Length: 419
Image 1 (tube, rainbow, N blue to C red):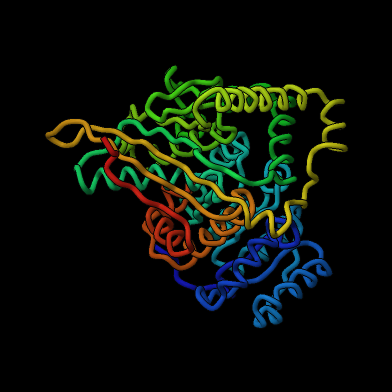
Image 2 (image 1 turned 90 degrees about the vertical axis):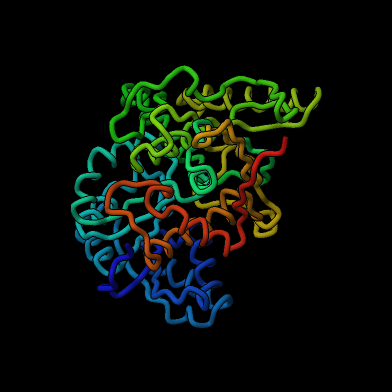
């Protein structure tokens, strides 16, 4: 259930001076009259925070009085002082493996709810091992992956499973996700996080086992089956009539979905199968696009694994942390995701479902800022049954967050699959 208000603030935006943090602050400013939250901006540079606050006044005059808080990501005392003043911390300060561990620890110590944008599987595993038990004891709900990775996947699967439960008293034993449309840029922060994963693996090769394990984020990791491995090559889907290729976020999203199933007590079965892929058009053009996409992703990671090449990429090619696309480009962005589920109805035959999750706005910026902000508001205000722990969007906020995101303009819909 939602926690009683014993603190000065409902939400603190940590990292508000960064590119994505500013977008989260702008979203909260635009929707202030709807959510009515007591919120504040936080960072380590007061001058930059004042500049952000000044820019928010044009969106909502009330932001002129927005409190500004100072803390240091490496100073436990300053983090404790900050998180003890709020119900929820929302953070965009990555790479999280480098800048986020002390903040999670502070939230666990103080029983403060937390949500972030991380896609760093190796760091999430570290936080689970270090803090899940402590968070359960303190009541802190530590919720990673509250952006494009992995809310559309995690809540999309939950939506299909809830429909199956309500209408057929059963569950889907298999769900496949296909990204059918995605238009948007890549952020410097996302690139920095991807490179941080590679850096951590280079320093500790044993992390490869965590990253390659389909159940690497389960409470008790177990070896996955061959059919649970992420799609690496190009395939033609007769069902879609399209070519499909690897989806670069599948190695994060699939682990999060499987952790949700485990944390919820395996309501979708111990043998639940889940996969993700990007889909392209039919015919030679689609095949060439899929091949180039698959080859390009692989070539990037091979090149970036060489320190000298990586330094040149960071200096001359890749976007720098704190940068991102223009407002016009963010508005033109979008994503559209198809989920195909199937399972056996109670006392009946096989049932097939079709789900859709979509949003207008650049997936990694405009849409992600909306998802992260609404996650923080959901933790702060909504009556949700989850206890403390290192959780996922589905296992912590569930359909309450789906309802919030629908009201915020996102599409979450499910129906029986057409014959």
